[in-house]
Amino acid sequence: VKHGLGKFIMRDGTFYEGEFKNGEIRGKGYKYDKNRDTEYTGDFHDGQYHGKGVLRHKNSFVYEGDFY
Image (cartoon, rainbow, N blue to C red; front, side, top):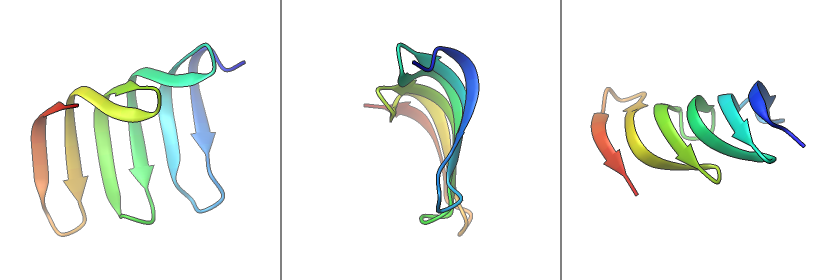
């Protein structure tokens, strides 16, 4: 079971680097989504953006705030 700090790389080049708790992506981390060409830095809960964070898209779109 993944627990603590680590990096998870998917076949398509997408990756997550940060905290895992009891096998889930949970806590602070960074995710690069190759398919959507986005980067997110912030809080995660069960693999989803949840809490404070910054989302950047390749077209220069940036959102900084709360995710739920």
